[in-house]
Length: 275
Image (tube, rainbow, N blue to C red; front, side, top):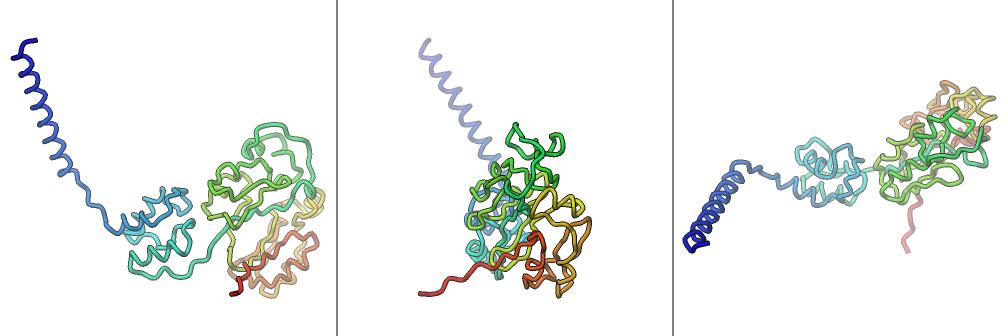
């Protein structure tokens, strides 16, 4: 190639490079989107787990919602009170007192207490087991299947299958709700970490004799808990007791009276004494 050809090629490349630079520069100005400084500051404070437990598509979605005033500063379940306080400082509002929530599995029918119809050999997935003949191997068609689908989706190692039933480690749980969403039996709910709670550890809607036959700790719908509740906050529908947490004063009387011990009275987290 001649010198003239090399010079011409170099010139063409230079001109093309300049044109591309000008186009990109113009596009960056034309398509520039102003970033809310508060949104960026909030995103910096958020833990970055992108678990979706806040109800928004990741931490960036929550940061944008908080900056727009569409979500409270304590919306992040992972960050807890410390993150809420920092975000409140950024937004210039009081974070307020937040009650930490943790997941709770409403089934106590482990391998020692619940009866089985057959031995299951198959995929360790509750959704698959729930579709097998009879709705799984357990005699109770409402109880925990123990397949571990909730374990697989938990990014915080906060739930494990122990003796055939999923159990939550409340010290690790951040209430991201992933386990709640995946459970085909809808057995998992959120309860307070700090406060005393009274929970029916059963979801069976079988009649009393059937429930008792299937599981030693199943709710038999006898209504003794409702009759003894001083605040009338317990109802029995479809042979299953339900507690209105808004009315409940957590006296624990229902748990004491329950003949099958299907109600658990979880006392509040003890406060550490100053040394």
